[in-house]
Length: 193
Length: 168
Picture 1 (tube, rainbow over the protein chains, first blue to last red):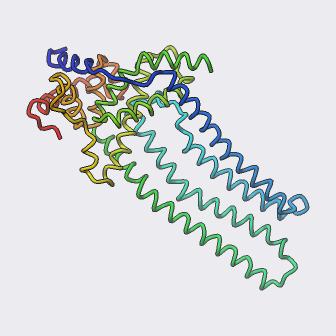
Picture 2: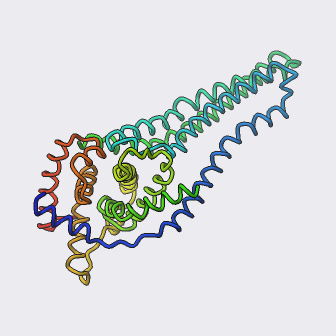
Picture 3: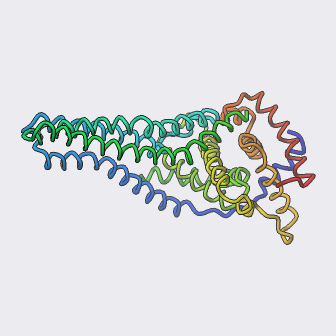
């Protein structure tokens, strides 16, 4: 090792630092871990809660239509929740398994996956929910005239598509402002080598 | 849980100063270094159960630290693009006239490191903390030869910046 680096090393090691003690940090970490556990529980609790709610509102066991409606909606929700879980709680992953180059690549993929929730999974969920609701309404309004039934299906579908379109566009704008530049910065960092 | 806490305590006591110096070198200011240090040890805590004892604990911690630092600074750079540049630069380590000569030199060193490319900051910080070329290669994912080439280039840039005062 040359002398110039040795002199820098001496400087580097000379820096005196005052850091929090381990016990205080452990208390904070235990609190954060417990909060994170609760957040995950709440996220996953929302699925059975919705299913139970739908089972109360719709006589699912008395009608195949309602049962299908519930299954479609639950499947769509499960898909979204799984994607959210993967992106929101992936900090539990073992970062040390990656060297810096692999980590940058891994993180770019993770951010791209997050963008897919908006561009792909939200629309799949919208389609499943749309199918579920329309199947449920087939039975709920079967006694009405065909024209009225058609109009109700059309209105509900139109409203739902409009709602999802607006929500997805809003999310896309947020992604463009936050995730896309982050991905670009990570890519440029990767190319620094 | 008690065991996890005991292991964490030992790891933290052993590594905190090394990791903090790396944070300072990487971020160039104390406020960010404090935040980054906390973020790193949150990950160490979360990943502690994944640590396989056959690998070197120092390399394991450095990997977590450098990966977290890369992400932290990328996020910060992104915010920097949005916020007024002047406000951001205000948080960089300042050299106070009353500080001792050695302290001024240390701060100059941190400032010089802070203007390097991100991967280069990691390489020089690890080198200054006595890591071998092969350890640095293992942490960064570069080949040992490439690390050697980069180090000689970084040294030139670093000394030039420290000597001619062209930091900032």
